[in-house]
Amino acid sequence: MKLPKQVEVIEVCPRDGFQNIKEAIPTATKIEIIDRLVECGFGVIEATSFVHPKAIPQMADAAEVLQTVKKKHGNRAQFVALAPNLFGAKKAIENGADGITYVISASEDHNLANTKQTIAQSVAALEEVCKIKGSTKVRLAVATSFDCPFAGKVPVEKVVSLVDAALNAGTDEIVLADTIGTATPLQVEELLGTLSRQYPDFPFVLHIHDTDGMGLANVVTAMNLGITRFETAAFGLGGCPFAPGAAGNIATEDLVHMLHKMDIATGLQYDKIVETAHYIEESLHISPVGHMSRVACSIKN
Ligand code: ZN
Image 1 (cartoon, rainbow, N blue to C red):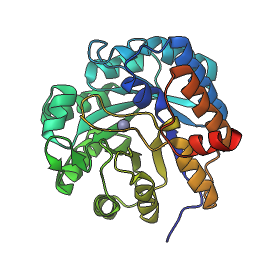
Image 2: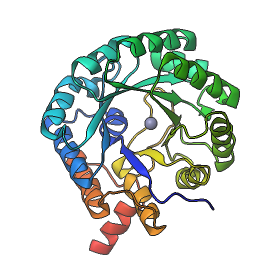
Image 3: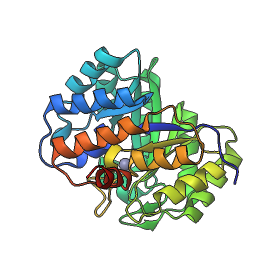
C-alpha cells in the first residue's frame, strides 16, 4: 500500500452530527463541544449550517455559534459553515465563516430533495457564491458522490461534470461525500482514480458515513490513491435529514485510532477526542455509535 505520512482530519460533528438530533441542543452545549474539539487539535471544524430554520430547527442559532467560536478560537482553528444556497452563503460570510461548504448533489433527485433546486440552478448559484466570496474559502460538497437514496448508484461521469463546473466557477476545495454511507472500496477507487487522473495533485476531501460499515475500508482505499484529507464526526454522529436511512459519519476517534496505529500522523490528541466523545454522550444523552468510545468505556468500567 502507498500510505501517506500525514493526514488532515476535518471535524464535522457540530454540523453533520447536531443537525440530526431532534431535541434542541442548548447553544452553550454546542459551544462547549466545539471548545473541546479545538483542544483536541483540529485545524478545521465545520461549526454550523446556515440553512432555513424551518428546514432544520437545530441550526437556528448558526450566527451565534459561529460568532462565538470565531471570537474565542479564531487564532487557533478555522471554522467553516454549510450553506445550501446563495442566501445561506451570504449569511455565512456576514458572520465571519473562514469557509463555506456549499452543497450540490451529483444526483438530481437528491439535489431536489435537499435544496429544492435542480443541479443547474445550484451550479448557477455556486457561480454567484464564488463571485462574492472575497477571502472566504468556497468548498463544494458533492453530496451523493457514490450512491443516492432515491436513484441508486450515481454514475462517475455525473460527479466529474459537477466537479468540472465547480472548479470552472472558482471553487477552492471539493469534498466528495458518501452521504448515505453505502459506498464500497471499489466505488471509491473508481471515482477517486478517475478524478486524480484528471486533476492530479488537487487535494480532494472525502466525507464519509458508515451506514454499511465500510467507512474505514474506504479511507484506506482513498489513502492508497493519494487522498490525505477526511471529514468525520466525533462519536460517529451524523446523517442526512433528506436521505432516508443514512447513518452517522465514521467516528473521528475510530479514524484517528486507526491512523495513529498505522503510524500516520494527524496532529490530534486521541485521548482528548475520546474524552470529547464521552462528553457528547453525557450531554446529549445518546448511546455510543463508534467503536473506540465503547472500547474506552469497557476498559474504564
Ligand atoms: Zn454528512
